[in-house]
Length: 80
Image (cartoon, rainbow, N blue to C red; front, side, top):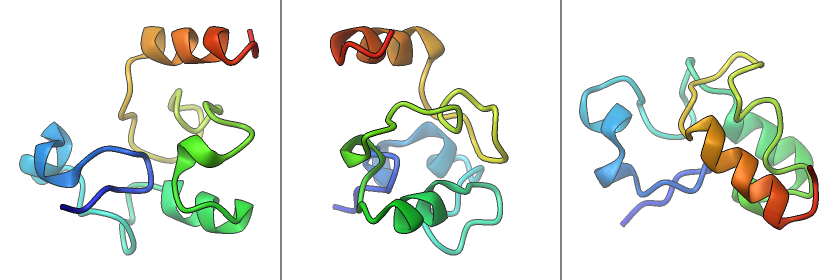
């Protein structure tokens, strides 16, 4: 079972299943793998900045998570 950089199990990801995501690196539509490598983490949720603007679609990448869920995570982490 492959878990992507964004934390989604690829085989169950709707975008992956319909061909809108090619999986992590190389993926010309998503900067999350490159960003995680630059930050020195394997998965986005291990980054101190998670969730960041990239997850909200404010950078050049696919939007995976619902904004309300990301807002909930920020609140739980005390980042709101």
